[in-house]
Image 1 (cartoon, rainbow, N blue to C red):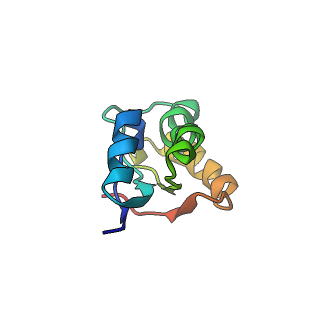
Image 2 (image 1 turned 90 degrees about the vertical axis):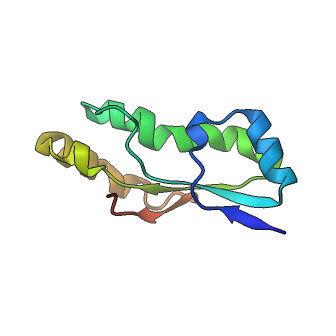
Length: 108
């Protein structure tokens, strides 16, 4: 059976996982927009953990025949910091035209 993995946190995966996904019939992976497990406190923090990580995985996933897609958002927990939210939201338009970005998701 072929499938698309809709919620793969690839930032916490190792290459053995890529092999297992492909052997199980995975045709592509989709990275959710998610809270990193800690509050990011600046725009660079968000870039490193939320936007850069999908592009880092893009270098590895093609070796395994797995196209990688991602969603963008700011988590409501982090949006409580209005200045951070404004800074992060200002970044998002610059990534919307990337080939692997599916869009913006409302995170709960």
